[in-house]
Amino acid sequence: DAGVTQTPRHEVAEKGQTIILKCEPVSGHNDLFWYRQTKIQGLELLSYFRSKSLMEDGGAFKDRFKAEMLNSSFSTLKIQPTEPKDSAVYLCASSGTGGLTGQLYFGEGSKLTVL
Amino acid sequence: GDSVTQTEGLVTLTKGLPVMLNCTYQTTYSPFLFWYVQHLNEAPKLLLKSSTDNKRTEHQGFYATLHKSSSSFHLQKSSVQLSDSALYFCALSDPYYGNEKITFGAGTKLTIKP
Figure 1 (spheres, each protein chain N blue to C red):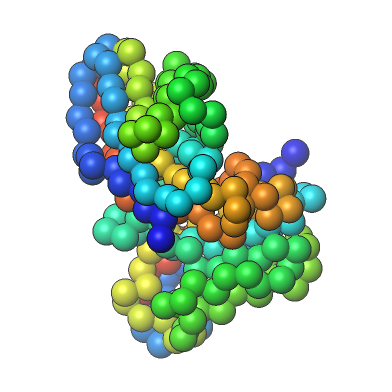
Figure 2 (cartoon, each protein chain N blue to C red):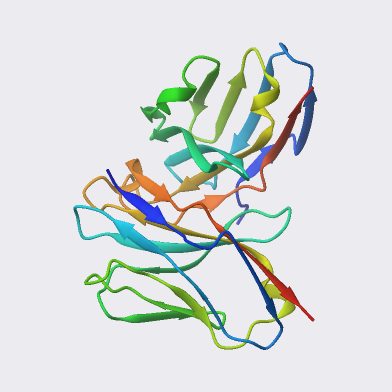
């Protein structure tokens, strides 16, 4: 079975640009997560979808970060406008437990560098 | 709110030695605890999970026991290998909230030297 697929793996953006990161969850999984990973802050939740409904929008990330789940097999994370402090690895994860506690399956991440 | 504490940010060991990575937590409910491992430039993967008090769980030579009395879920291995060099995350999930509320620790970077 295919795991979680994230594209692009690497993205370099100028400050102020709009970038879109993409995620395909494990087929049949109905929970999808976006995390930001940095050495200082560790894993920070950006968004959580359950059956395509946004359940958690990450509070502090609302202003310039927007995640969408257009269908059960595809999600995007838009950052607009980008700032140098957004440089991080963005991880997508999915789970097949219908909201109940379960194992997360992570993608390899999209490494964003904002100049 | 819930919290997970991993006291060691960096651990460096020589191959063949034992290791224990600390994980303690705070929560109101009876939680699920997880250890995830992330090798360099790879996706984090589940290593261990448990919700049963005082029961040892093992996988790939690693083991951990959930102790609710001390709110701990320390990760151990009796003899580390070079391939164990990775970032290790402890995570907690409240069954009441399920996947809606997962709390990760800051992570421990384990480096194994020859």
